[in-house]
Length: 390
Image (cartoon, rainbow, N blue to C red; front, side):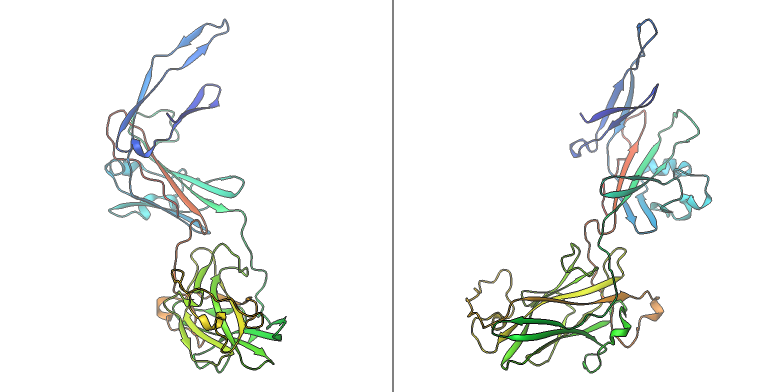
């Protein structure tokens, strides 16, 4: 089951077989014959040939970024046995030598996206870069050795969101029945004293990892006895609050990031700070987007009076009067631009910024896939590695 045949020339075929998890740690004979017809339509058939294939797994990691591919393979018996012959597709390039990066426990290959014999393919959604670590000699047609082939690839999505500008955002102005005209303003500040906000001319604001960002959301309205409530905040790498890549900071009025600090402020202000982080992948910008609303002070059952509502809480929302609270409005500010520094520069500038939360998003920049194949004439090799995505 799972065998397919593909003709690549008049007299050459490739036989592919993809094993399943149930076939792990077992070996299988794959037998075949070759047939041909002459000009008189007489059929000639070769003797049967058999190949023994062992199925196994090795610890293998593929890391993809915007310029390079890195693959690490645990040195199994089979790899150690062939270590002196292993090479990438292009073994004539000295910079592609596997010995340069490998250590005693792992075989390591590092290459750029256009060197060492890396090939480029594409499908509807991705551009795919492929290469292979092999012990075979590409100048020879046959081999009588136990060859190793470690095929790996990186897939980069063709479509992504783009940041169109780095401008400071002006205050958000809304008008609603019962509240009239009111304004929400979202600003970054230089310290927890909130005395000096970051000038709009300096955007994008340069930030450093693990330093504090200080933010203030302020509501301005001519109606007395109103209060501001920040229901949610999230970070995105693009100026798009609906980006599929996002990190939750505040949700349902509850703080979700453990570095967030809430500072004392008036009813019309919300001041908070958090440690700066970066999104994994080729994303150097961060936008902060919040959902906010205005409420009449002291109205029981309004969203402002309910505060934090956990997802597992039984706290039911009481139906409000029409003028007790405004609609929810989305406001955002950014971008924060990640500044690259060395360890010796860990103290950053006067604006304490840089986002320390690092999280994994499936296929954020690229997916790494590795397929380990081995050919041998005797039973029980070291196993074939699992597929792994980055």
